[in-house]
Image (cartoon, rainbow, N blue to C red):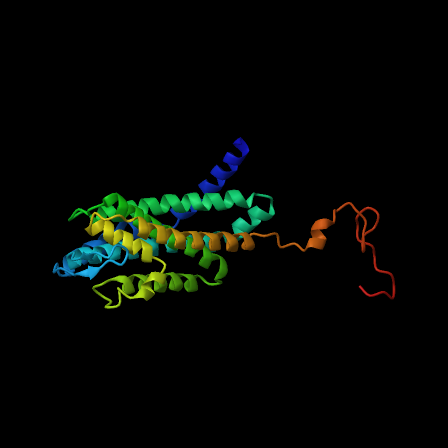
Length: 283
């Protein structure tokens, strides 16, 4: 048990160090979240913006600037979590592969990345909730933080997928940026007249948007929205695990892995050394 814990702790330490070295992401967390939420509060009119919440069927009429703050917080946490996990996976892929091929258990590597992702998303979600509630108090702040946390986890898992399958850094950054913008813009009643469309139910953060709107502006249950978001989170996490497992697999052919250095075979002498080719034979 101590060995497993030591392996997990070591891998988690390296994962957290990798995140801490991403100074641009740290700057986004500290500056981008409160600035974006504050600008939404100051520049968007506070006129009521009525819309129907699909998860509960309620008609909510929050001030427009409060509504934009919630969607802005969702956009900020999804972008930051996606960027951080993509950067960590993209830059650390070779290191993870060497560890796995050297015998480091991939199960512990995956658990360490999950632990680091959970800590990062929890901190970002709590910070965004505090920033959004600085000028007004959400009805259910704990549930709002939970919804933001689940959205961040989902995009963090997507960041792992993109970091494992895409070949260039700009491709992953662009993919995360565009998915988050389209995802949240289509669900914002102020920017999209189709926010009540059935199509939005298939967007990655649909459950988190429904839960966060309900938590921010009503006392209704957020269970349905969180349950929907957990389905997206489970699918993204499974995809991330599969691509990470494939990326860190042993690249040696099976025939080479079966052989041992000291055993004679084709092309080897009795002592395991290569035989010289006989004259007239193909090499």
